[in-house]
Length: 317
Image (tube, rainbow, N blue to C red; front, side, top):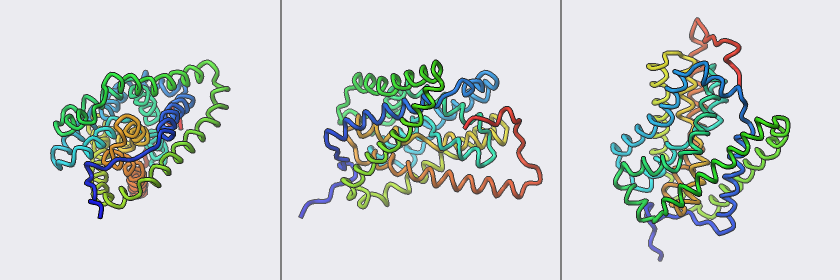
């Protein structure tokens, strides 16, 4: 009888063709994101610089710092801690824009934050991952045992993220009509490819989900709740605007965990515990966001005074 593997030894197995497809899928995803960028997405940065600085601080600094604190408090397995750190370093997900709008939050603020954090992460994500994981000894030692070539990791990840993003953004700026036509092709292609890759990964690694799901889910739920709370507290106390606080709540709580999962599978040798954190987060943050959106809408129905946002600021999905 085979000895059951521990979560530290779990590895998501992918064949060579799937690994190549991961890189292609990642590039297509970033290119598709850039095709959808508009000049007005950056206008908010000029007109509301303080809100943007606070929002980016919450996304880029506060969330990884809170994650590091949470890791010290719960002391998870090193691979789980690595997955949590990678999630925290990823940019906000576009679903945050939808939840913000449905919650009567500040949609323009949400879109601007998603855009800026995506661009920022494309340039510095590998540096951020290595920096934050290096602040916790177990993850620092784990990265050493995985024997990642740091220079190659930084170069490959930056090129895979940055070049498609810059190409898509340049095309969206120079040929906006062509970009919109290509977006209708590349976005569904990226989504279909990612769903296929995830399905293949889940299908060939079902035993990992069965064996470790009960261990992973409570950690993901606690981590995601901490992320939502970080966004809300930052917006409520530093920006002091209810609509922007709601936008920031979703922006920090909804992460592009699909991007993080691709990085784990392609750069961290399919480390099972980290991959499970990111895969579970991909589903859980949607449920958490939907729950919060429902709470916000219910609260509004009980409020005599609705949230009013200037028409010119409430744009941009």
